Amino acid sequence: MAFRFGKSLQINLTRSSLASHARSLLNHRPISVARQTAAFHDVAYWLPVPSASSSSSSTPHSSFSSSAKASRDDTTTTVAVVSELDNPALAQLPQLEGVDFLVGDTPEAFLKHDSKMATCEAYIFVAPMKSTETLSAAWKMSSSPKWLHSFFTGIDALSGFCASDLFEGASLTNARGAYSDSLAEWALTSCLYFNKQIPRCQENRLNKKWDKFTMGHLYGKTIGFVGFGHIATTTATLARAFGMKILALKRNVPKQQQQQHQIADAIYSSESACEMLRECDFVVCSLPGTPKTDGFMSSKEFEAMPSHSVFISIGRGSAVDEEALDHALRSGSIAGAALDVFRLCVKLYTVSAPPPS
Image (cartoon, rainbow, N blue to C red):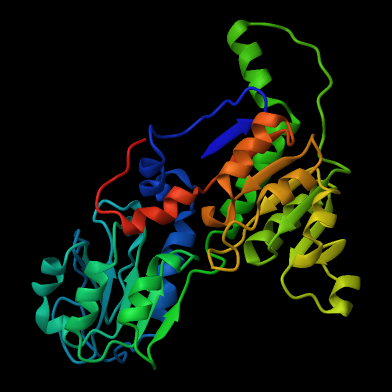
């Protein structure tokens, strides 16, 4: 995560390189235990379970297999979890009767359980991983794969797999809404970071300095959302509690929706992006990564924003023209930026080794 001011160009990264930041995303994005567990339960909920008369015994969780049944029978369903073994999300893997979770980060790990993999119908892909090669290999081990679930909301990392391996009739789902609360809080924290001049307060504390200055407040400020999906509407609900005015940008906006909306004070179409941005004190971009959203926030959009405004990015890094953002910050066109994602995060899935910091 990074906070950056236009004039001072202060950058605060949680790791020495953006590559490390992307790989440790689960560590630094505060996902609640309930949310992590729910992501696994969402898949298991739809899987067949044994009847009440079936006998079972609990087995302790291991780094590779998690099952509530000690012995395999026809009522046990296998779920292949493709993930790096040190991913903290795996700590929330539930013990469910009739469901056998197999966790692996290499094709060889799944080959050890070839008899179970032969009938595996459900797969969970837990990013970040360097590639989808393990997923592709595990998928082909099954005679009847039916379901692939993305542990994250975004599925752009699976685009190559979907094009080559996901056949017609198989289902692809994502974790829509699982991270909305966390991201909404992070976005509002970013607003307060700039509005309350947190760096100035931290510096005064270190210098043991009493600095009497006028501190801003969010009440009455305008926050605009570029993209108004589940993450954005959750953020808007919190912003409303602060007394902020809510503006939203959506790709398709029926006229009746422009006039009446439960959360937003006004909704704009993508053609009216600059019109909305001119009104904003804060701009939150939560666009997904698609060809149509690539570089959506470019020079024209940043130039439309007021010089005191702050840009907050929590969707996909590919939606932001980072060179244009850099120019806007250096020139003072906008006051600052808070970035939870970077374009580099997307590139991690196409490289074989971590890029230099």
